[in-house]
Image (cartoon, rainbow, N blue to C red; front, side):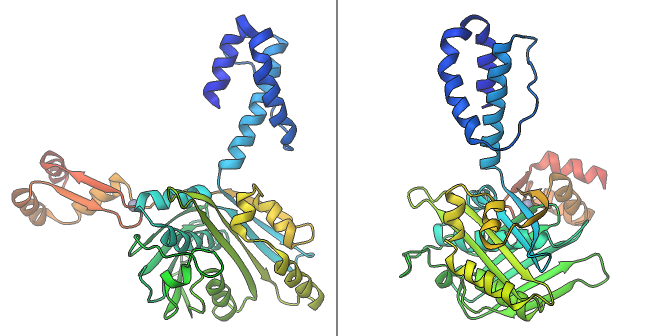
Length: 359
Ligand code: ZN
């Protein structure tokens, strides 16, 4: 979109009256669809004139719209006069990034993507530098699902065996329960900056992830909750078409009529992945289950691993001179693999010797 903007402004000097009309018509349509207010137009490249401003205005509007449609974010909200706290997220991009990095097959993508989505929303319950890690170990062919997130919307996930896919189940959905298994536990570890991390766990009840987290919140954290989460995968090329979820939590003293109202609405709610796929925002999803939710915050979501070239070099330094010398003499190179993000850091002999000199 940015390229188009620049090109249009440049050619506008000569061709504005005739050739820009068609483009302008299209972006005006897009602008009409967008409800968000736009920034005041700025004139780029030193060109001026009302025509450019109009084009720039509408292009900027549609650019922002496109960006909003594609970007992942999560929101924190409350509803029913503060009786309910709620989280909702669109995670299509981060789940696709996870799938691509780990070459996941469809059922594995759905299982890990659902877990990552809930973990990210649980991250929004933390603050500052707090982090959490989730492990789903249900005894199924996928092995373990590991997901991590922090309070800044950054997360990652991987599975022991990414090459898992089954036929759709009798509801026509990806058979996540078969991949995850139903004989095991869901573990949560929260690093809250204390001496000891918080640890919680609960038995896996269905292997469908959403229900398992619901059970975890109720039994381990004593918080009545509803968790909806979904991932829609393109069967043609395995790419992620839509992913997202929500968590509703009842605070102590929630009146029964509020509970019944929410239950009734949840019963009528379409699948989350379908709503995300149809273009509903996290805000619009919460509007469907809560009466006029009050949005407290919005956080952008991104795939971010804690590994980095600096950290990997530090890890090599920590091997000590003796081991490093042996590594250089015997192998002459090293490869460090990060399980979380599947990044491989390669060090040739010269790079290893350079690290040796710093020791
Ligand atoms: Zn990594």
